Image (cartoon, rainbow, N blue to C red):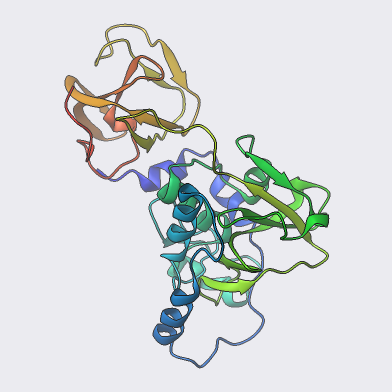
Length: 294
């Protein structure tokens, strides 16, 4: 089972909205340096450059694992690079539907999820205003209070987080890793403390998964959570949209057919004291890897 594309589809148009958040397009020709050599050199420089908690370091390492991957307008997901969309303004992004890569917000979303199981919303402006942030730093403070793994923001109106159009992961020592614009690769850059710099937020240090659980992302809207692994009893709760859930164990239950898939696997969510059909867990496997049987 592969649910990555369906996750984007259920976002109700957020894919296009996310793409519009990273509107920078390259104006200069790519460097003649070999892409493989350049990516290798850049990867060596992409790492936490200051002390940080393990969770923050994991976010950095996940972002750095994508060094050398192309920028693609609207591309990327929590699972990795995807083909993007053609940039309507033309230029180097005019053919990004043929480019498998990340835009800025999806690179950050990937790093947060793969590194630390943190589920960020779609869109740079939504990420900038994310209610789960554990600390915020205004533009006047520069990079002095930041630690690796913090998210850097740029907006057309730095005082308005709703105007944020670019986001990147801080490495420390004035450096960051970013997916900047079409025609370039995910790379390490100097932090740009320019007129559009809108500050930063810290995403680590919040709620941790309960012991002996594994975190997954769901897909779909109004997904019912059941008191038993089946649909015979009314839902005890519903997930309004894609949600990070912590799975304790899984079991065989009622066979469910939905969205063209059939599956009898169900997962128990201790937070909700309820079950969810594995069809609605965004993982390529029908029987979730690394999750014990109930």
